Length: 345
Image (cartoon, rainbow, N blue to C red):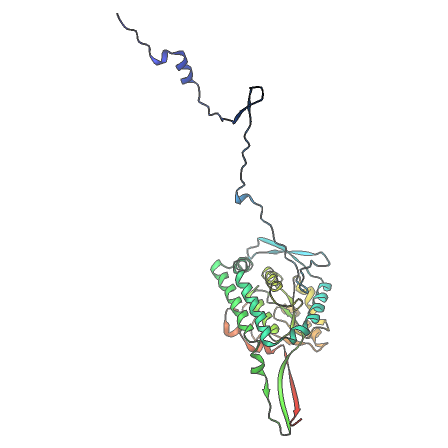
């Protein structure tokens, strides 16, 4: 008897499944209810956000006055851009009252800082360098953006800034030995000459070198026991504000260093005319303001520290150790006191 065969395609059940598209279904957890029915429960899937989707917290750059970080009493700010014009942040635009508050804080802090032993001042300043070392990456990023430097170049600038701070800190207990003297006199007296700090020093920071130049001009007056009011670079102030965060967490007493950001044309004449400022570093003063600033400072017989003759702020090589590591920059903010003491008394 002939045997009949049937192909798979003739089976209606097989043909229907072969022609329909396949679908993947999600199996939900199932449980039985109290009455025996089957209850389906939807599953909640949590999607973890990617790190790239996170909104970063932008840093607020403030003033540094008397160990505090206030905003300007005027409420003003101005935009700070990178070397390529990209907006970076809004910095506080200090007012005249902010400057007066900074000078008052520096004056109050001066006696305690000046009375510390030279060795202790050196230890405190060395501690600043230690904390700067811990923030090298942050300083590198800010200096690179501000000055338009490659990462390796910015890293070198930051390293030299830290090393320069250490170099000046080492002079704290040595400068008196170099500048002081025992003087021979033709009488029955001991005669000694010793250096003493001038007082409150105003520093108009270099405009081009945002960190290395600032450190090179800020450290010398501190080494001698002076308190300082700094006008940071107007166009590149962010590394200076980050430096104040280092100072605030170091052993530097509140008020010894005060840093303002803002318009130099607005603040420099006020600083120069302030009668409670004893010395002024005019390195970063715009050229067209220099004469008027020095005339204003002369009214209170203010000591003036200038750039080396024939140099400009824009072209000065701050990486040159011979040009930037100078004991004379410390001596510029010291007064020499001579003491006569009778022999045998």
